[in-house]
Length: 253
Ligand code: B12
Ligand code: SF4
Ligand code: SF4
Image (cartoon, protein in one colour):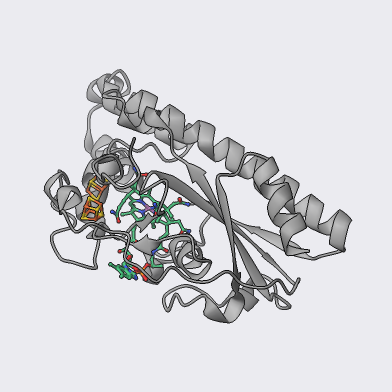
């Protein structure tokens, strides 16, 4: 069964796949896997290569490459779920790449399910100095998704060697100094650079808007800031920084 599933998944164009026992997924801040599928036994973790688009000096183009990957990831998750059902009468749920995420004040920056901890449990990589997962062949330039199923599938072995080279290039190239403390990404410092038109910026815009005269309000709508906020709001998260991904030398050819 495992090889049949692996072959199907890789045949879709997924770059790598790993299997983990639910008990081996250890992400203390995330919810227990049973919250998503009470009869869950196995996590199937998927790796997708983030292509050279992420290096583009244009952040618009880098973001466009991310969206291409995200659409492909969604399509693969859906097809894999259908395959598990039709071939093995399995129950499975697809876990989000990023959003939707439960919105709670006491869980800022914590998703329902951690894709990184899942990938590490499934033997697909290790945490690097930048707190991202590094795949031994593809390096940091990967996107992660996962499915959870009630099928009992033999787990893959966790990686025993550290894939990070400890060169600190990610730390040096972080424009927000968000990685200065080892083992921690400072959320607000990262967001200021990576999502300058996210929720915080949106709130600030509307607070200022409320205090302005009708004439200034008209000007605010004609300003690029509003257009960028509107784009982020309509398309979804718009990243403006990929430095920790693109500066990591592991797996880059
Ligand atoms: C919320 C979120 C963010 C937040 C907060 C990050 C955070 N503190 O975890 C912000 C907005 C800052 C963010 C930024 C980025 N993100 Co983000 N993010 C997420 C999301 C949606 C949830 C993460 C989460 O729940 N974290 C909270 C808990 C689970 O983490 P934690 O227990 O606190 O662990 C932290 C540390 O303790 C450390 N850590 C934990 N165990 C260990 C063990 C060792 C040995 C080490 C060294 C560190 C370490 O890592 C964590 C980082 O702070 C995930 C998708 C998902 N659902 O998993 C994507 C995800 C983590 N993001 C991703 C990416 C690519 C980015 C960015 C590069 C943005 C971009 N341009 O794409 C930056 C990189 C920032 C960085 N270097 O850490 C990818 C990572 C891919 C990879 N190669 O690992 C993910 C997995 C999305 C995906 N599906 O592919 N992100
Ligand atoms: S995404 Fe940019 S700002 Fe955020 S941690 Fe990585 S390099 Fe720093
Ligand atoms: S840039 Fe260097 S220190 Fe940072 S994660 Fe990659 S290999 Fe590790």
